[in-house]
Length: 201
Image 1 (cartoon, rainbow, N blue to C red):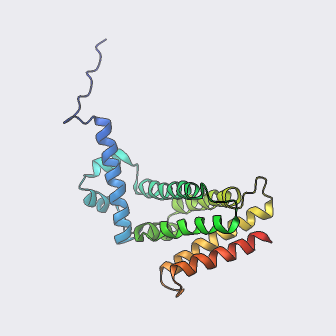
Image 2 (cartoon, helix red, strand yellow):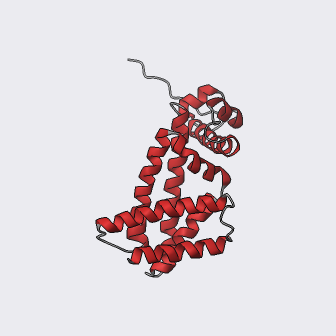
Image 3 (cartoon, helix red, strand yellow):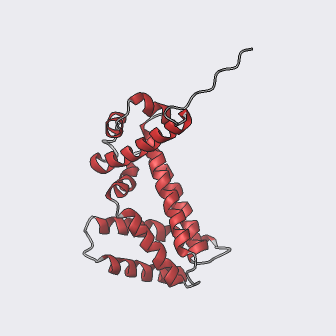
């Protein structure tokens, strides 16, 4: 039986590396298109044009448009979770200080217009909405364990954490739209104080 010849690298870059590079290009282009045209306007053709790649390469990386959007939203959630955990490292076990840091990181992450638009408009795509619902659960766990330091949170604690996560996220989105009239520092301070009071009940 004759062995298949090895795939030679092109200009020193292997086939797998080129595939990974094109995937990153498509993701970056996808976020640009979301920011410009919204989730509904993010088509395979628009992403390929922005990335400078053909549809062949799109379908090499993603099975469909929703797969790219899901990856973008999932990457955002994972990055934000890791960012908050890292930011909390070394912060004293003080609910006020830790809550303030977590909210500040959330605000920072959504200050990027394209990311904010992806997050807000995810409700229009069932696959993205399901992913966002799971993210609420993940962030509620983060609040309970890493922010409030509860090792064995009760059912009421979890409900409180979910209310805080969803409510704070919506408040930040409303603030980004310019509807609150609050400065950034005032918003973070207010949401921090409100969250700490709610968690203490």
